[in-house]
Image (tube, rainbow, N blue to C red):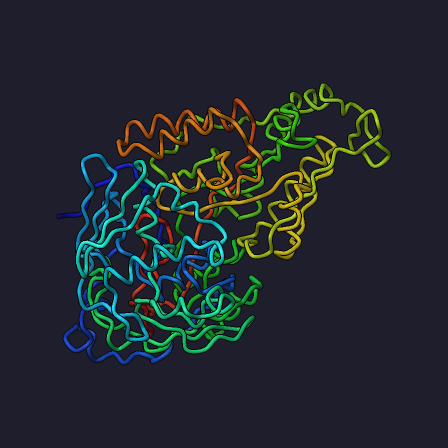
Length: 551
């Protein structure tokens, strides 16, 4: 058995600027400390990381926050990791094999792997995880298992996944934290503890020691860890730094100030306006990664006014000069989105794009029945009802200047169209109520991933068991057909053709969405901090396994 090449899986663009990031660390960072050339260097026992987003859960198969990925990577391992060439490489799995009909995936687990509570990872533990993570009492969505017919034990360390039909999403899931196994004993926890995840145990290089909500989480390195994916990490054995502290610093200026003052060794989500501070100062280092999957996008709710009218959708698309807005909001450090698929994906089609046309946008709104304006300059229909687009974002997913971006959009279309566009952050309960009652006009979302199949499925598929965040209320047979073609075929050319057609259809022909900005993970750190690893396929920081900073 050997790693299986899947050329259609995304290659995330990792752009580093004076930052010590690589797919494999250099000798002085990755070799055993007792034999490396840097044996005279003494390192701190603690590494402190200032992060923008506090995980809503530390349970890997529940948490869907892209920003929580580096923390989860420090706690949990996956069966494979996907490299920059689209090849699945072994990690917890010693090997895997896909049947000729693409309906069976056989996985052999490395022997000797344990969870942080001492329980061993074997076929029984793996099968229990696959079974329990389909329990709706534990997880909100089981869409990932839609194509899974059964999980069968072959021997003590080997099991197979039997599929109802070929599904490219499953291998991608097996390379991420969403399918990272947890200790069998953890399924005995009550549901609340299981969902929070602080008390569960992974196979990763660290385990949670303490958690203070709203403040920080403290991780302690495992002395017995020795199954890192060496081709990626450059070494094996326990994590370099004994204690890693992730401090939750939601305010952008607070994070930057904490790094500049030496309170933390690294920060994520570097404020765009502060990038120059770290790029131009030799005391620091900086990197940014373009995320794969789908970009930050505005999804028009086509099931209710005003976006049940394609002319209104097209007008908003044509009025927003996203290049100018993104350049201004992100100080030239981010890339405007042109398509429903991230430009970091090999399935991205550079030919699909919208060209601003304000005159046509205004004409379309006139045709749609919003030809007059009220005393405040906002368009109204014949009944005097204002053309309003209220956006309410789930606060759990507000990051990377999304608030400022939406405010800039609001200002532009008010001036150019006379449309009342507003944005505000709301708590998860309010957002869930809006979703359940279909009281929202549009919503904003992005899904980072190594492959586009799952992000597109959950955002566009009309089957609610699959498209569980299809909040654009898109029920379009052609969209479903193209999604199925891309999902069920392992042939890259077939998938590429389907996704190219999908991009044009969704964006141009039907105007279902307005792509806004390619999401990214950015990081800054002290200049002498080392061991930062990049996730070659997803466009993110790998975690804390190799990081350390001299005393």
